Image 1 (cartoon, one colour):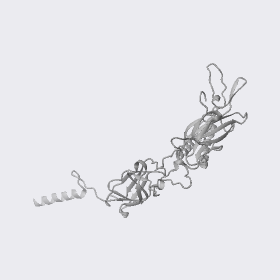
Image 2 (cartoon, one colour; image 1 turned 45 degrees about the vertical axis):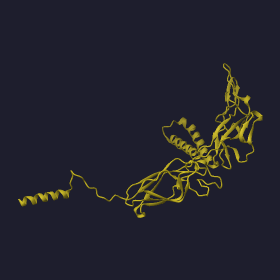
Image 3 (tube, one colour; image 1 turned 180 degrees about the vertical axis):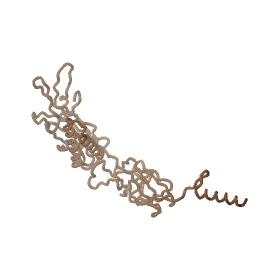
Length: 361
C-alpha cells in the first residue's frame, strides 16, 4: 500500500521517491467498508465460474499450454464453493486477506524478488476487537463501546482461504457503530509480520420471492388454494440462527409476510391469516398460510396475473415476483363468420334455391 494510512503501524507504509529504487515491505492493508452480501448470489457466482471453466477446459480448441492455469483456477473456485457451503454462517462476511496486501520484496544480486501472497508463504491470524468506534492508532488502538462483545466472531479458514466475520446472534450493526477485527500476515520463512484492520457492518439481505403458476379448473369452480411461500426463502442471509423465523410476524406472532401488490379484477382472495403489513406498508394488508383465489365468473376463460412480494423477519421486502393463475377452461364456442364467406352447406342451399326458382318459372 503506497501512501496509505495503516492503523496499527502508520510508519510501515511504503513510499515511492522519484529516481530511487524502493524495496517494498510486507504490508497488511486496512480493509474497511466491509458488508455481508447475498450468500445465494455468492454461491451462484462460484458455480457459474466453475461451469464456464469446465466448458473451456473440455473445448478441444483450448490451447494446451493454457490448461494447467485453467485447471488451477477451476480448483480454486471448486474449493470456494465447497468450503463456503461447509462453513456458511448467518450474515457472514468472507474476506481474502491477501487481496490488498503488499508482499515483501528482497534484493538479491541486484534483482528484486517477490514472495507470492498466499497461505503457503504467509501465516494468517485474526483477533476480534469489538463493536463501537475505533480510537487511536498503533499500539494505543482501542474500540470504544463494546470491546468484549462475545457475539462477534472473526476466524481464519485455511481450506476456504478466507477470513470469516459474523455474529452468533445475527444482529444487524447499528447506524452509529462499526464492527472491528484485526488480521496479521507473517512470513513463514523470515518471521516478518504486518497487521491490518477489518471494519465491517452486518446488514439484512432481502428475502427471495419466486414466480408461481397455478392451474384454474372448471372442476373446482375456478378456485385454487395455494401457498406462494413454498418456493420462497430468506436464504440470502445464510442459515438462520436457532429460534429465528425466516418471514415476518406481527406483534401477535402471526406469520403474514405475503403482500399482493394488486389483485386482478374478477378475482377474490381469502387467506388463512391476514393483518397489517410492516413498516411503511402498514396501511396495506399482508397475508399468510393458505391463500384461496376464486374467479368470480366461473365461465371465464381468461388467465389472471398479479405481482406479489414478501417480508422477512426483520421487515425487509423482497423484489416483486408474479403469481399466474392459468385457466384450463377451453373455448368451446364455434366461430361464426361475417359477410364475404360461406360454407359448403350454405353453397348447396343457394344452388338448391336457384333450381327451385327455375322450376317455378
